[in-house]
Image (cartoon, rainbow, N blue to C red; front, side):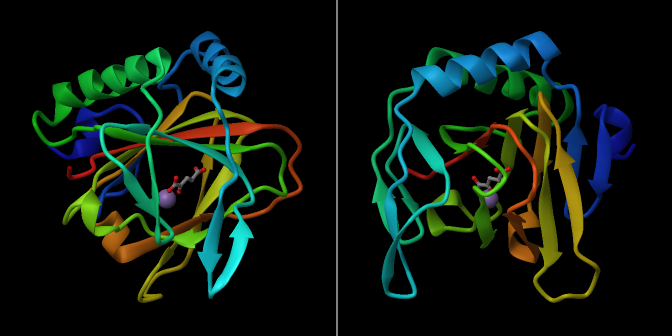
Length: 203
Ligand SMILES: O=C(O)CCC(=O)C(=O)O
Ligand SMILES: [Mn+2]
């Protein structure tokens, strides 16, 4: 049986696996989470080193988890777990345990906040050494829908967009970070969006 028949939602790629569940959270749960995270977290726009220059990231972020995390060559200390972020982590883990026991586990979370369509994240893959050999990442989106653009590193196939809707869950399975890059490009879209990417970081 293929994953797409076990797990509700849309299997966008089978191998490596990219799976999209549009209604992972109810509309009410998603809206409540958007309000709470935008008000209750200490959002920061740190400076990072890009081609030898210090530039402020064009979005806000909060890192939560059990270990320090390296991002764009810089180490970040995690904030304590917000109870709602922990609850959503358990909701994802319980959902995945039913379909793939033992495969998915998360001890860290990067939250990104894009206040408007100008705010963005450039091309990258989440393949830092501390994420392990074949990282699995679960990503919840809240607020205005925006497209996450994917491209193959070897350009063997066409780039494509995945529109990440309010309350959706995107699962990036083993191989996705090795074979593809992704970006949240600027768009003429009004409204705020918050994204939660749950990861496993080796301690
Ligand atoms: O905002 C998004 O959906 C993308 C976030 C992302 O790629 C990341 O946190 O590594
Ligand atoms: Mn990413």
